[in-house]
Length: 123
Image 1 (tube, rainbow, N blue to C red):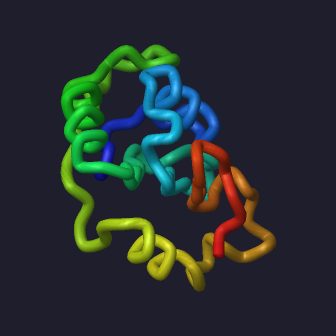
Image 2 (image 1 turned 90 degrees about the vertical axis):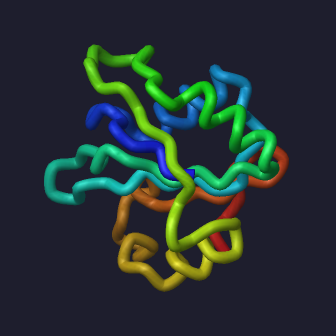
């Protein structure tokens, strides 16, 4: 899914904490919060690949219109199906050779892969 209207102060770490606080740990295998490299803030959206359709529907129910952010913000999030990439394999293929994966990029800016709720190396 694509989660939009994320407050710009969120990092990938604080986004993961938010997802896990709402009982999604172990329910996703890919999370990517694109960043503005010059300003060091997120671009306001993220991609989350949920493991089951039921998890995706639960995610959409919770985060559509969500505004209980960790930071002061009047933004209400929107959730939509991600296009054109869906599924772990497509996301991995999309970002594997992307400039964001260059060793000089901060780890916090990179897409993340998970197995059994734990982050693993990007293939």
